[in-house]
Length: 210
Ligand code: GAR
Image (cartoon, rainbow, N blue to C red; front, side):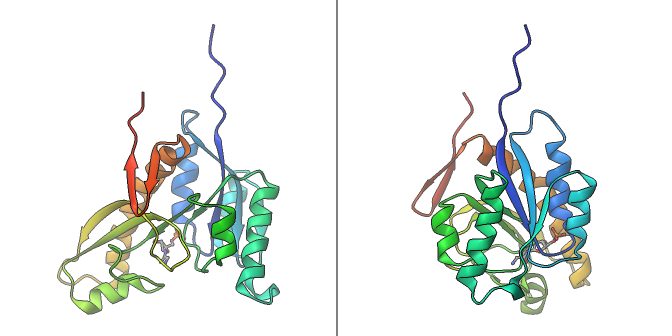
């Protein structure tokens, strides 16, 4: 007798822009063996390509517009409310360009993931790719981490190095960084959804599957 499929872990993906990382997660989740289920895609602004990608995949969308809220705490609460209204138990930040207030971290402790286009703690913030080129570093990359109260600071789950080549522009480097993000972020989300990531202070370990 066939076993019924295991229930998938419900996540909301937070976006602000093109949504190429969202697309990589949608593509991975098309496999029934993938452990996470995208129950909602939430944007801080209307009209972005990521929302079209979600609709094309028949995933519910919500816009929680930054400009509609008096402050970061109210905005962050509304993001969490929208995610929980869809049954999400974790937030996956995928090109989400807003900082969540501490109330969101408290509502989803060790349940918010982010991908950042640099090897943190180098080059935090919204301009990591051009800053790495301007600084002349030879290696940059991708950091996937849990989100805590400080910007681009939480416990690091996985990093991938990407060399900066002579003649790289922001566009060429970003495209090589994103190719790595698209490969590893869906894998990390699957491991997280299976309960394989253990956090102790700043250290994250990966439990083996039994
Ligand atoms: C991604 O490369 C992500 O690492 C970066 O924005 C891009 C969004 O692309 N995030 C940050 O810089 C956060 N500080 P996408 O919308 O095509 O996934």
